[in-house]
Image (cartoon, rainbow, N blue to C red):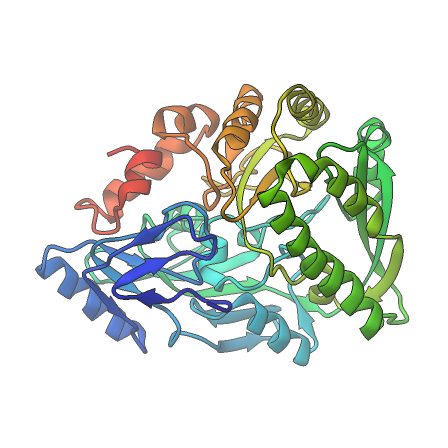
Amino acid sequence: MGSTTSTKNGTWRNWGGNVSARPAREVAPASVEELTAAVRKAAEDGLKVKAVGTGHSFTSIAATDGVLVRPQLLTGIRNIDRQAMTVTVEAGTPLKRLNVALAREGLSLTNMGDIMEQTVSGGTSTGTHGTGRESASIAAQIKGLELVTADGSVLTCSEKENPEVFAAARIGLGALGIVTAITFAVEPVFLLTAREEPMPLDRVLAEFDQLWSENEHFEFYWFPHTGSTTTKRNNRSAGPEQPVGRLAGWFEDEFLSNGVFQAANWVGRAVPACIPALARISSRALSARTYTDIPYKVFTSPRRVRFVEMEYAVPREALTDTLRELKRMLDRSDLRVSFPVEVRTAPADDITLSTASGRDSAYVAVHMFRGTPYQRYFTAAEHIFTAHEGRPHWGKVHTRDAAYLSGVYPRFGEFTALRDRLDPERRFQNDYLRRVLGA
């Protein structure tokens, strides 16, 4: 499957392998005009429409039995404005290609997530984020976007133009229209020094506020069944560049993080009882290291071991309680979890349905190896997250519906009212949106 999803025998599947759909037809428009024509034609035929990126969502947010729009021909940079320090890209451009192209131009996004396989529109529409004290999700770096709405018209929006659409469509869940281009704020390329080191979980939790406040980007991975974490601090640096050596990089990022980790997960799936022992070995395998490089080479890493994921944003001040409860739950249960729990942060932003909308947030992500039953673990974790008014990542497994979400998003009604205006006939509806936004 590589970085993108394929449709076999008419069935589309996502990257995690947990969602499939059979669209009535697929289109790959080469221009905004072709896309508007496809949306109008779908309306004539009484079919729903969904754009799909690389299928990196674990929810059925992109699934449709109507017209599946593939954006692979809507790619590339439209314009770089060095005066305004913005770059406008076509919606189907993979983040990976955007990062490389920007670096060639001596530019960079301020912050990014740790996976860059997604398209820019798929990544932003679901709220993809990294970790940051002041810098927020990828969508929060959007300065303008172009959207094809249900009647086939093309809306451009920014803080000045259609501002109420701009407030919502940066993380639009595919519910307001199909994004065709995005304008991002960029800055001159800079260097980050990454410091990765093991640290006991108790210490990380006791010193969390300090670790968060002293670093521009702080995150950690906790290995269930152990008291160990791997911490990562990324801070801007004057240089010089000191990238991870090729052999060391291959050993840590490919051999240990992907190769050995894949094998350990296979063993764990076959013999769950040995997972705690494997976890202790895994938590010790990654040693401390420091390196300095351009942002995308520090923020992102290859993820070749397939998994299924649930992630919730809780208020940042609730993080230590949330994690202690998660650890207590695992210690008391017979669950065996071979994937680390990932913890990141984001500052409050002003996007209507952003997981960090209006509140400083901490993200807790739980993962299970693909093909391992994950329901019991995720259900127990979700219980803990929702007790803290957690907001689920739109592209990751969760069971929440509009009744719950309208309670944790103060601006929920603002979004649904805008959707009523832009898509009154629900051309972009699917089962997932019906559940999370209401009928």
